[in-house]
Structures are given as structure tokens and as C-alpha cells.
Length: 158
Length: 290
Image (cartoon, rainbow over all chains, first blue to last red):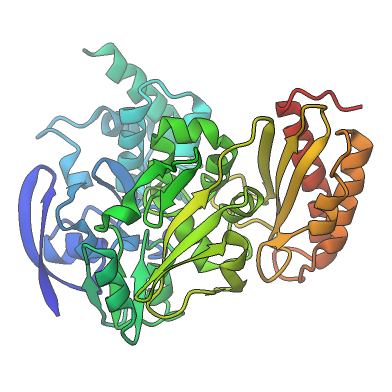
């Protein structure tokens, strides 16, 4: 049985039908066409499907679509402001913190959530914040450098 | 994932009624249930989301100065409450070993308890702190010790129609310390090969008035090492005493050998982790170990 799910996604009110057994990940990708959020392991280990739900990073594969009714969701499509990349995205480009790119949307959302609560994280805090995001390409160092750089850029700009 | 209906009741009574139906499963954080449903390890006809019920989402002090943690309170929400985080730093730290930050945004201590994994990181200190559980059902409410909730791997003591309404922590004694240590090959995102959760209270004379040692991943359920705990009572903390308690705790463990570690290895880990956790508690209590 399908039900109407009403939530705010990237600042816009969205209504769509979702099945009770559908995950938030399926709802975003198949229901709303927001395919920037990636499906990796589908059991909460890889973090590829990380989105923000009411400001908190979650694995969209572990959340049922119905649970998102009334929630505020931020996906990778809502991170940049028009053509202006978010500082985290710009820094990942500048540092080569992305290779195949599959984990990148999830990494960006985890980093955005980190900088929201900890504007000046140290290396350990950065590594902890992305511990739930697996990257099989980069070896993480360039991602960590990029997030540190994004933090210093964000705190410099008023 | 198999087809099921999703329900989001607003009251405890509605939850209990829905959970009595065949194939109904309670959903708190969903971080265990959703992958179990997807992988066919559990089946559901109806998933009953507990997060719209006020009693289940509240984290509040009890009238006697303890805490009541609603069954649907996430680990993230526990950490966001400064008073709770200050008073129960060790319990919070153990809960923050569960999965990733993404998982902790959703996962609950009640779910960690009911999912009944022997390796559940949030559970040993709940037992060590003498937590009790309010279990709500259609017939009313009953109380279970946290230690009685898990009955075997993946099995718990709740009857159909019952749900874990809240975990209740008794008031904190004046001189007490707690610590959970686990061993994992990886620093993050791993499952304990063995764990030890320890709580030590001192009396005014500096002797151990109460001690609880609870072990993870070395028995079908989180294991209370009662003989090891008893050997500490009435004694002054010392390295020799803690060494003895750690040895007894290791002998109380009944681990299996599997891909993550042999039974012998797990017993050795129990001794090391218990000794270190006890020493950490002593340090926190301002005791210099001889």
C-alpha cells in the first residue's frame, strides 16, 4: 500500500507516493529523481547514501520513506548554491579528494554536518566524522586535507 | 525488501495494539531492523514506528534523581543533552561506539538492548549501572532488569504486543566511576571481539562498596561476571586486586571461536580489558594504584 509522503527536500516542499517498505534512499532516487544519493552496501556500512535528516547525517538506506514524512532532508543536490560549490565541494576538487566519485556525495554531506557542529575540527575529528563513509580510491588523506581546508576557508569568510 | 505496511501511531496504547498483530515489528532507530528485513533475517507484515509517541522520545530526570531514557531516544539525542552527557559520560561513550555517526543519529539504546546482539556496545554499562526497563503492553506495564531483556543472540524477553517503553537509570552514587572498553581490529565501524564494562563505587573509607563487571561478545548474551565483581567488594582498589578480578572475569567468560577470534583469544582479551577498565575507574575516582 502506498502512502503520500510530504517532506522538505533541499528547501522545497515535496509530496510523493511511497510504499511502506520503501527506504528513504529509494524514495529520493526513484520517487523524486534525486539520483545524486548513491546506493552502496544497503546495510549502513558504507555511507554512500548519507543525507541530512533534520540536520543529522543518516544512511538513507536505513531509514524508511515513511519516517521522512514531515522531515527536512538535505541531499547532495541541495549543497551547492546554484553554480557556487559549497566550500567542502570546492576543496575536494582542489585537493583531488575524489576519484571515482561514488562515495563523494556521502562524504560531502558528512563533512557539511561536521562543519555545522564543529567549525574548526582537528584531524582526528575529521577522520571520525567520515569513519562511516568508505572510499576505496583515495586512501582518505586528500579527503581529510580537503575538509580541513574547507573549514579554514569557511571560518575566514564571514 | 519484502512488502510491509508502515504505521506511525501517536500513543502507547495504539503501539501495543498494533504490535499484537501477527508479523508486527517495532521500529525505533531502524538501524538493525531495516537491514534485517532487507536481508530476510526477519520478516514483518507491519512495521510500527515508535518515534511519534511522546513517552518514547523523552529523555528526562526521574523524581529520585535518576534518568528515564525513552525507548525511541537516539544516541545522538542522548549526547545533545548536556546534563545527561555529563553525568553518564561512560555510558554515552559506549553508545558512541555503535556504528557510525550516521547510525548514531537513529540508533537507540533500547534497540541495542532488544536486538540482543552479544556484542552490543551500549549494553554492558546499562547492566553495570543497574538499569531497569519499563515494558509496556496492552495489559499495562511491567519492569524488567536490563540484564533480563536479552535471552539469546537476537532474542529478547518481550512478548508479542510488548515494547520497551523506557530504560531507567537509578540515581548516581556519590563516588562512582564506569568504563567500557572493547577490542576491535579496526578503530571504527567494527564489532567487538570482546568487551568489558565496569562500574565501581567507593565508600567513604575508600573501599569498594559496589562493583559490576559485564562482558560483551563472550557469551550468548551480555554476561555479568558475578564472581569477579564479588571479589572486589570491601577491598581497597589495587593493581593486584584488579589483576585477580580480571583473571576471574576471564574464567567466567564462555566465548565461542569464530572468524573474528578464538575462544582463548577472547578470554585473554577479557582479562586485559577488565583490568584496564578497572584501572580507568580507579583513576577517575582519584585512587593511585599500587
